[in-house]
Length: 144
Image (cartoon, rainbow, N blue to C red; front, side, top):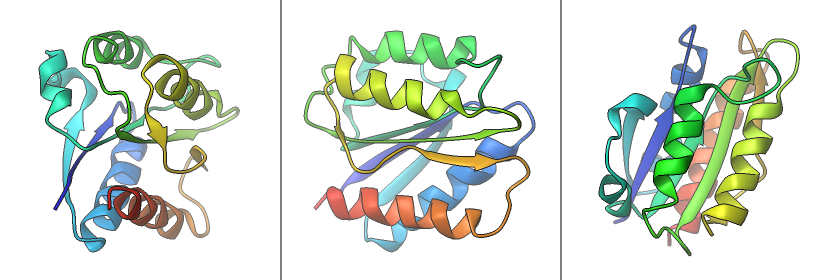
């Protein structure tokens, strides 16, 4: 059984909700998922203990919030190459954050991305919960 970290930054609670659905999908595929707020990770070695890293953030002025940027900088020190990655985020007007995170995780951190970024418009509409759980299952299945 593998372990996945589902790390998120949230302003309104929406991104936390998405993270919870993703974690449900991971556990339904037979793996463990740990939910962590982005500012709870303080050391690169904490990230090394996981087989998969899933990172989500709201879009903040067409970019990433500072805490998410700081986590990505910290993750560069963690030697995560070859681990499984996934990204998600919520947005109101534009949804750039998941794409920016996805690119950083793939290019700078060397993670094997399990799927395209999940972008859900705030508030969750339609099949958002199912799409988040499906991303979790896809990540879990990628973990083996």
